Length: 383
Ligand SMILES: Cc1ncc(COP(=O)(O)O)c(C=O)c1O
Image 1 (spheres, protein in one colour):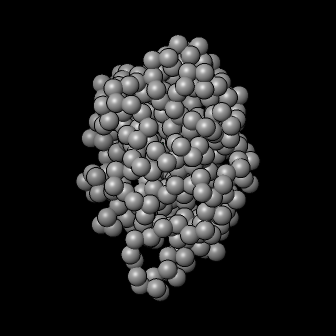
Image 2: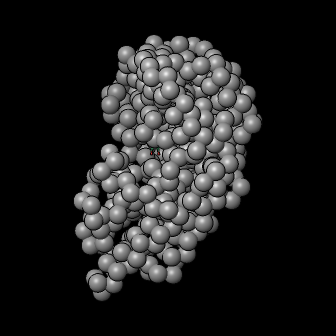
């Protein structure tokens, strides 16, 4: 298998969202897709699929269900039945479908902040009110859930939107914390919508725990959303799946699918099958590369960027940079205009996050070095 993660692939004019958003002289380090070509088995599966040039409405085959069930058992010790999987055109649509189908209009939805903007926005699409529960970093740079505060607010809501592993903090929830969150939701009869799209990118040998795997009572009230899209870099395939073990919940979710029948992207299904069944060697290499990039970035921030700080992400390829020591009103705009580096703006992830930017380090090292060099020079010019 040829796999040179250091090579820079030209993505301008390929329809890449990441590379189309800003002028060509801007280095895009924002939206969460990686600048690495996909695993060879995915290319082979797609090429083989196109030998049969019919691309009508498509549904997941038993083999794909079996592959996913095996993956969930092997990687997270989670026993799921094939019929408990529901295929979707994306995790973000899945979150919205769950809120629309399962949460009574006018009720409250709890979201931990900061958080991925489409999760923050989702309750508003369905006439639901969002209640924020902020994370606070502790002295070790961890972001523990404030369980007492959670218990205080759960009686006021009907659903919790969980991001695990967490975007943008890169936090991996451990089983004990998830258990406390899940039990509190059971006690308060709160639905859990758990976005676990980053579950397969974990650093330092960490393990992912699906919250629904922790007890039947938690599973009974949980919609878990997963996809190969982040780990195997196939976000453009627009294919994801939900695990809904409670048959009644699954029925209601399916009934409220906004006209999207159980049919998803034909090629996405084959790409997903190839990713989970044959993509492990590629992913192992990519995770090692990302972890090196993460450490390189953290060291650069510490040694070359007084005024910026970051905690080590435990997952994802996203770093949450606190720029409050720079004394710049809008750091995202500053780096865009002065360094020609496009980062994600902190304010998208929650109130009071305007001093943060999110940097995507899922790219060849030379690209990361270039972004940091541009940012460093822009700060030096400023004096
Ligand atoms: C936490 C999280 N959820 C959902 C998504 C989007 O998923 P999809 O493209 O499958 O809708 C992303 C993409 O960055 C994400 O980070």
